Image (cartoon, rainbow, N blue to C red; front, top):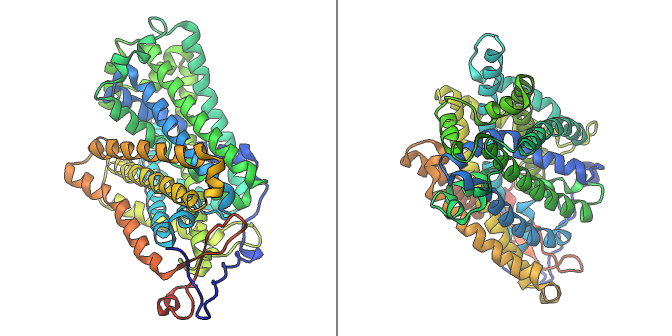
Length: 507
């Protein structure tokens, strides 16, 4: 698609940006955005949950390399993503990039996929959070209660914070994140300083331990741990200096998350010893121990072990709060495009936040969670496992489509791409190859993520592609315009009066 023209034959104008009253604003710096993105990744949760899976089911002591591979793939993806950032002047993340590069159909397909993926992972973490809080209460001698009570209580708190200005959420996430990272870093340092169980496990990087059939499983669970890192672009309008802040935050988020995961995984393996790592991880998966907490108690003592268990709760809470903010802003952007009801695109005059969109997101999450509760699913395998599976497929599909969009965008602008071949062509091509391989790994081992049967896993796996198709069809209600800024950025506008379908759009 190359653009549309008005009935008079002149190019249709790009839409005016949302009215100032309906634009978000803020003074978020690089650090605040990085905090929220890393919080969405829930690092302590990944260390406690994904690492045992990568070690016990994946390539054993070579599992840390899986996190490095995943980080490298996402870092390569980020090169094209960041290079295109100055040419995408709205806070829509993947949706805006794909719309600019591939057109409104692919753009809305991406937006619908993102909404499904982020909602899924948020609901899944609510299940995990409810289970973890109940486990903590029982551990300290309190009464056992249905996990969903704690899930819905957390949902209410998230609703209150999400309704208000983003800087309040940033402060809450920042405190939680610093604490959870600090306690894991302390554990890592103590383990490496003491030499672990039998010395530093250098076998981790031996090719015979890395390149085993299980490397695909390790990379799969590593990718799951990065879900939400691209949300840096969602906060564009609330960033202090988006042209610098967003690229910096994106690179920092990927590097910090990747290094943290890889080092912590290596530390846990060193802590129990190379010969014991797989057995300890498998015992954790069988519910007969806890790789992270038991190792923490061995090297830090029972008090810090208890502190870490409490911080696991804050990690999960930070995760759902961060995804709540991301989803609310996706809805806000789509509403200002006329895709969703206009009310979702209004900014609160009091809180300067997409407050109504936040309320709608809360209701959506509550309804989905209630359905899963009524189905009497297990909070970990049934709720968290299945929803994380949907989100992982969605995330890789989103990044793959975005990388293709980056290639298409710069292919139409040889003057831009000719000066920066590595960032505009080479990196996006490598990203497409890496992400295509990643989605194969995810789908070929999908039952390990969902914990369900092949049939259930297939049904869950096709949810994101179905969302993309629905959005792709809905995208036909819009047309691209050929005009944009001086760099030739395509905008998206509602069709001319000659298109009767446009009249049916809300807002």
